[in-house]
Image (cartoon, rainbow, N blue to C red; front, side, top):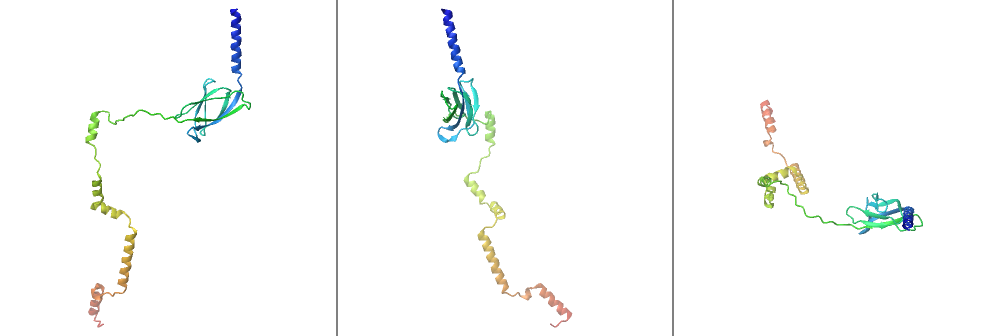
Length: 206
């Protein structure tokens, strides 16, 4: 009797194993999207087949995937910064291909606060603190900006603005008009004096 029960159990196990092994293959295809925004794809998502020795597939940069799986396989979608999602392929698929739109939700992880100190010892901190250069306040910066040296440097380096150019042009035009209608005094001309002395010396009465 015990032998008969053992044989029946063995046959049942073999039948169940054969049924599981003979699960039909299908082409599993889809795209992974952000659950908060259905138009944003999630690239490079890991797809682990939990029903087939944890085989792993990776979606491309557009979140697209396509690989062969069995009916009723459990597939886990994981990505950094997102909560994992498990998708089960339904049974009795007639077209031998299954397409799914997978939505995974962003997951925010709050890390503990970390304080970073650049000094290894208190002696290093004390040395750097004593040698630290204190930055100028607003009043000191204003004093440096309006100092004579600063204003002279800016005058020599900065280009003239439109008002300065217009003033210089108007002044030059005015000077040209004044010189055009004025006569020079020959007594103030050294060349004229030289010519006069030479004429007197040569005896020219003119």
